[in-house]
Length: 60
Image (cartoon, rainbow, N blue to C red; front, side, top):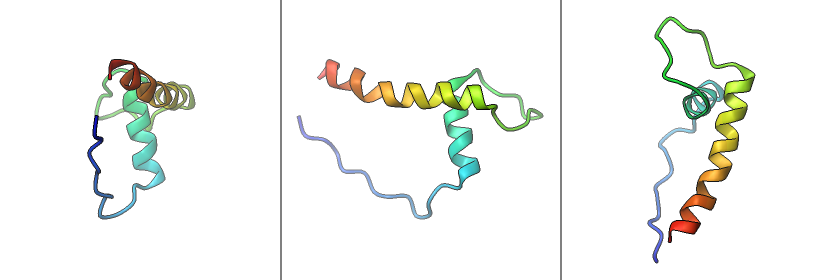
């Protein structure tokens, strides 16, 4: 199976944007008034990010 090549983003993500993306993976939908995601939420998101390629490999 051929893997699609993705283009790099026009500008790199900031640390804040990266932490927010990992926070979305690691926890429930956040309310607009909430602060940035916590360490535990970011950690859970990072673990999910590491697991995703293994799931994809099993499905193909």
